Length: 343
Image (cartoon, rainbow, N blue to C red; front, side, top):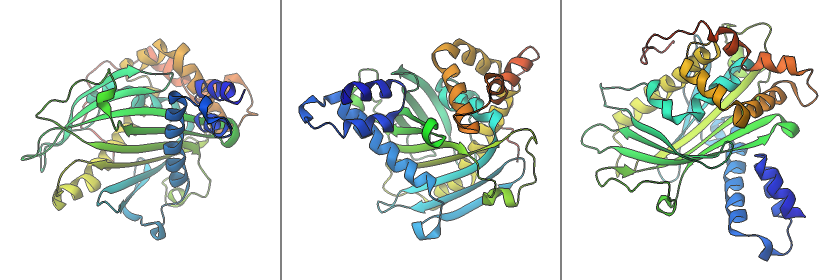
């Protein structure tokens, strides 16, 4: 019965709740390979969630790289790990109506190249290919991303497994994990590695939760938030191992000081445009996947923002796709300048 209930919870993307039940199974012979995989994913999610829920304090090794209070409030932290890799963290309060648009921007890798900025100076950096390789579940998917790197380094590639944990009914938190496959050759959906491309490692996480009214970023905010909306807090962490013996310091500084912040601002900017009906390609995808995915995301967003005893379904619409539907008829079809990032 524990295993059956765990499988039911896993199918609902309640990953940590499912793992908690599997750990209670006394007869370990009943725990099959796919259960072990679920437990491994849960461990990754638990570790990432615990770190993102804790403030980025110096005692934990975090150092502030930058803080912005322009069009959007966010700060960027980093810390050096024992193996020499650099972990970055971004926290950003946003209005609740960006929940679904932001998740859609992250969830549609086939459109990454339409909005992720690229650079030619002082270093060549940018996404040269992005594609969904396989949809493994409602939110679980396998993604391939190739990135240009500056000379003399060759192009890099990462094969990402994205999955989620819905703990909104209990804690009003939804978590997302993005991890590179440790053995990509074992997945039939993964294409053979190009000998001229280096496959790198990636470990990322994202949390959606209610934003505390006393969050430090709000103290210096210019107050550009709608008065009739509650705020959610986005927390994103990532560490990349580019498989380089030595990472040039100038290149590392460029990535941490310029690239990461610019991509984050662009993600939020594109999410605004999706919400406001100015990105018809996203609007069409949201509508085509509404029954399988985005209706569920809408429900979860409502619980995160208002709690499980929230008022009504009509209020749910205000959180997510109401503005998309209202403004879709006047969507702007002109080509968007992908390098125009609001500061």
